[in-house]
Structures are given as C-alpha cells and as structure tokens.
Amino acid sequence: MSILHSNIIGDYGKDLLILHGFLGMGDNWKSHAKQWASLGYRVHLIDQRNHGRSFWSSDFTYPILAKDIVDYCSHHQLEKVRVLGHSMGGKTVMHLACSYPNYIHSFIVADIAPKKYSPHHQQILNGLGHLDFSQIGTRNEADKALSEYVKDLGTRLFLLKNLHWESKEKLGLRLNIDVLKNVNESIGEGLQPNDISIHSCLFVKGENSDYILENDTPIIKHHFPNAEQISVPNAGHWLHAENPTFFFEVVTSWLQKH
Image (cartoon, rainbow, N blue to C red; front, side):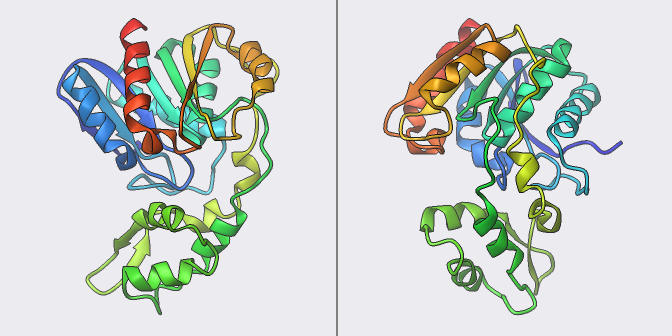
C-alpha cells in the first residue's frame, strides 16, 4: 500500500490535515500551517496522488483520493482528524466525510461546492503537457513556453512551483501530467444524492469567485445539514492567498469552536 507524502509541521496538538487543489501541492499552504502549528495544531501538508512528492497512479477519482486519506490516517495512527481542503482537495474532504465518517472530527471546504463542474482546466493541462524538457533547460524557458497557453502570470507562477530538477541537467514536473491531463472530467464530478455527512463543517468562499454561488446553498445543506458558510472579501478562488489574514482568522476561529 502506497502512503501519501506529507510535510508535518508541529510536534503535538490536534491533527489538522490540509489537502491542496488540482495541480497544487501541500507546501502551497506552508505559511498558514506554521501559524496553526504555533496555536497548538499538528498540521499535515499532504500531497495527493500524482501531485507533489506523492506516488503516481493511473487511478484518479474522488473515492480513491478519499481512501488515500484513510490509508494515511491509519499509517500515522490518526483518529478524529480535522481536515481542510481547497478546491479539488475540498471535494476529497467531502467524499471522506460521507464515506468514512469515523475518521473525521470536523472539516472545512475552501471554495468548492458538492455539485458537478464543467471541465475548465484544459488549456492549462495542454500547456503543461507540451512542456518539452529535452529542449527546456531553465525556469525562464519553461515560463516562456507555458505563456503561450497560460497568459496570467500569477497562474503560471503557481503552476511552475511544480518544476524540479530530476537530475543536475534535467528539469521535470512533479505532476503526473500524463494522467492528470485526462482527468478533467472526473475532477468536476459532484457528490451522489445519498452522500450525506452530519459532521460540523464550514464552507468558505471567495467573494469574487464563482465556484460557490448563492443558489448552491440548498445542495450544500442537502449533503451537509450542519454546514456553516462564510465569504472572504476581496478574494477569488485562491482566497487563502488573496486575503490570507481574513481567511486565517475565520478558519482559526471556527476550528477553535469545533
């Protein structure tokens, strides 16, 4: 059995697992994790399969990603954990709560709803898939090549965090792009009607994001009747990076009560 890679910050306290979004990695959350660790949490920055330093696999669905977290908890002997998931990570958390309720104490979902989303990463995936590391020898060259597909500099900088040196001479991606470029449809899948969790949970949306809409409240309440909702002002989908202070304060306040 393969176990997900993690960076554990903090030596003691309540276990808080953080699950990144699609094409991200656990270390994207390091600054928040250090703050939570200083408040007495042991924070697990987890790389989901085919991301970061975790193992690669051709199998990639939300039920499988949720089972990965169960295996991780079993391996590390964790019980009744608190889990925060952003975007794809939020969907993983939802499946975890519905399918494996005994592992969770409470959870937070950042800017994603339980509904089905249309595929919308294809241009990014095409760009990453076309990076030819037999020709690309520097980060600047990778950025230039990716800019033909991804115009937004902030998005490119986020994606290029996945670059690493496979050897002294050769750059590569930590992402298993050959698998991920074909999972755009499954990444958008929603929950099944009978997927329900009564755990305490918080859905946090970015004020300027269209991932969670006002008319999504009924579907959130259907699956998660004890869900609370809050909006982060002056933030889009990357709410934890765009308004980090507000995000940290509302999440911390909620965690300390749950």
